[in-house]
Image 1 (cartoon, rainbow, N blue to C red):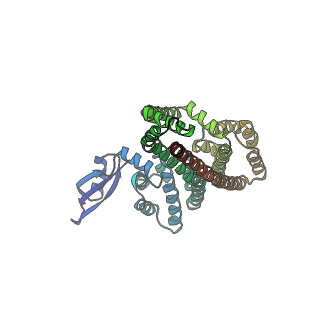
Image 2 (image 1 turned 30 degrees about the vertical axis):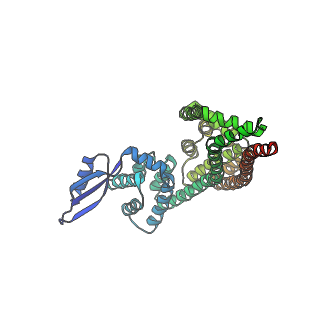
Image 3 (image 1 turned 90 degrees about the horizontal axis):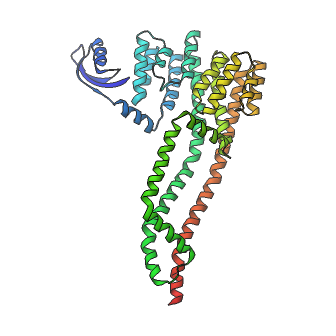
Length: 401
């Protein structure tokens, strides 16, 4: 669904401007005509391609906007504000494709659809677990409390993701800066300097010869190297779009030292939060596992949850199903077992998710604290080597003279 900006004349002959969500310009004009607006000008606010790139490059992702929207909806419904007015308020504070989606949801609810059915029209923005919780809340008459639970779940989910992302920002900056600086020195600064030094010394010291060989290689084959790197990146991107490629990458990621255990705990924490939130909202366990399978991003966990769902549906205990999948740590299996036996599965899963969240945050902080000095030392060693390669011929030339 697109968002159209319009200028028109209302029933009172007053010029009005605004936006309307519709699938086509004709549908937008029909909707405005039904509101008593004679359209003078109608343009699409953004093309589908532009909206996709805006969503990808924007500072706020659709998931974070959805988390904020859920919290705001919950507060307004608790305050007694009608659903349509609440959705209008959310739309006014949103932008881009998410604003179009909220306006579309608002129009469908106004036409008689339930909120869950309206959300299902945009599966690219609203995940299946959220829609299921909304549906349960509408059917049970507890939509406000369910939305509050969903908002809390989304906040924890985003906090977990941001903790890892934030920890990698500065090390990534150091790597990029160091690589760019090294390439600049080796291709722009060193070549003319080394040519001058070579004229003054018969035999260059070995650090200088190494630096010169690398510099000559980059100057001679730099474009070939760049093309090869870009080609490998494109090939990797293509492979990651295939099912086998994604499965291989996700398996490899979970087995990497240091990063692997963090990825496992992050994935299990997400699954625990999803299943805990859904079961607390009244969703059956088999359905909660199915929705968790559709909501988790790692293919390894997706396959494990699919197998677990089949075994649970066949009457097997959830802990046994999780253990046989081989993808879940013993602690997670034990928590599922104790939680199901005690009737406090949702509470136990929330505790497990909080514990793993804390462990991932601690591990991320430690990794950052370790990576920063290591990267700084590597950059310092690189700069020192280049200085040595430059100074040694000068010293030898001075001795010869």
